[in-house]
Length: 279
Image 1 (tube, rainbow, N blue to C red):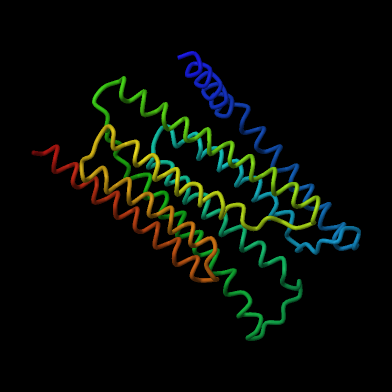
Image 2 (cartoon, one colour):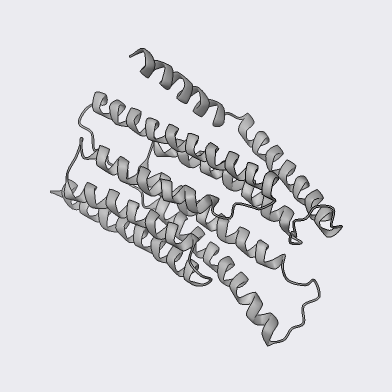
């Protein structure tokens, strides 16, 4: 009980500070800081002062990465409140990753583009990522609007116990993400390489956390509709993870397919619940 209370005090205190009014200002300052660092790094790279070749829009890419880190922390705290909302947050992150990819690819293009067939072919992946981000944005908003949260526990004690278990999972995810960031930072300063697989590794861990929450939920409800819903969310995470390492165009198709899948699941789940209520 002592360790449980200590853990809850630390976790709840961290979450309350994260969702405080000052968070918006802190996020803005962090993103601005990384944007300035990106500009300075790009200039140093252009002058060959540092050995790493950076794109023209590296500052924007780095600012998006900082914003993605913020979204990831939001995701960890959302897990404890709603599994469905955490899935929506995963799609938000994917849409931002696609936008970041567009800026990244734009940075490798010359400022004076020759508008020939070859240039248009180089622009196609950028347009595909941008359109894919827009489609994921639309799907995510629709997915949130379709959420009808149904409690699977039978009492407040069961509900609190399930929330505690999800907080433990979220705490391990936070520690894992910190370890990834520290490893990536060390890799950058020691070998001069950027860990391009950071979000791949994160989504791999999310697959296991989703499956673990699914298994924990079976303690409170083994109804088929709940089991299928949680399993579908876990499958969507797997598809999103595959999209992160998929070739160009395929990554967009996988992300959009995963979004349409969870949107369809949400609609079917709501329909089945309405039938249950009407009966």
